[in-house]
Image 1 (cartoon, rainbow, N blue to C red):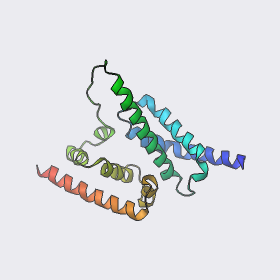
Image 2: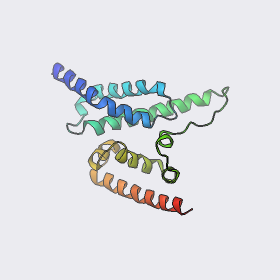
Image 3: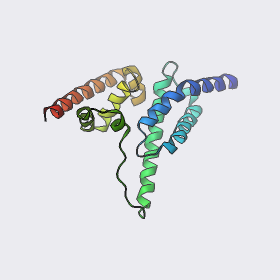
Image 4: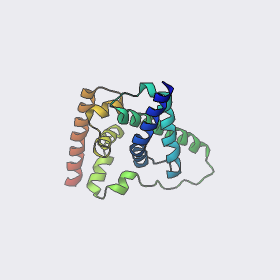
Length: 167
């Protein structure tokens, strides 16, 4: 079984690394690009440890769910470190990945008016191409609940976009 275990892990890393790297890169702020390799590595360390838990046929959304948790933990660690770095002068926030990609200010403004959860599910669907079954795996919920959350987020986005454009 050790050889099959190693082969499955090697295949997962080979197949999932680009998507995991892209997922993390787009959501990296406030971390830096120097942190990206460490985050990808940490994601696959968790995958290695929990390889038997990775569902066959849902490897990508499961791995993105792990990456999502790794990123949250890294952000919390950075926030804790930042509190202790009081001698540094505060700097202006860097634009987010969305700001670089979304040129239409009304779309960007509408996205910014959404909750973090709504924005996340919309971007997982639009940018990462995850359907409701994959979203359910990432969000640790049922496909039906993921579909409802996505539909509601899409409706709130349409409302936010309409009110932004009406200004």
